[in-house]
Image (cartoon, rainbow, N blue to C red; front, side):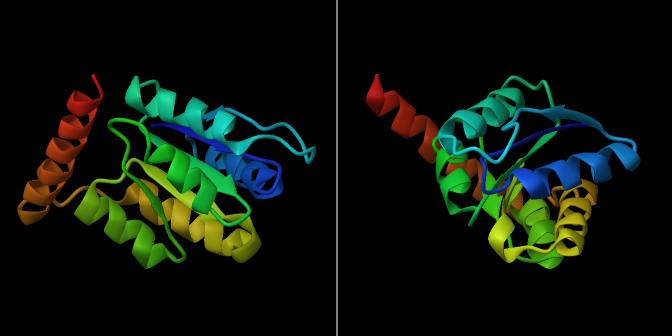
Length: 152
């Protein structure tokens, strides 16, 4: 499985720990930056991960900033992205099972290293449940298509 991961300066330290964790777990990681603690514009790094997910260069994405809010906003502006800001492993599992989310967003300021590992593991290992949830995801996708059609 291939995971694309990105952060801004506020999520950089946690991102680097998650990259090492994922590699130790045997995943292929596409590290899309940032590369340090110097202030950067988070939308650039969010867009890189979204591009990987949409073009199927990876299976899932992870985005991290200070709160996780900015990255989740950026990600959800992209067609085909269902990003979820989560605060515990149960939320990470449920967003995959119920919403077929393809990007996990984390807030570095509010997430310990161990919590991050638990959430990442739950997100990656969970599968979409389908059934009644598929109908709901289809509704979201139709709304997304309608929005894109209106912009043309």
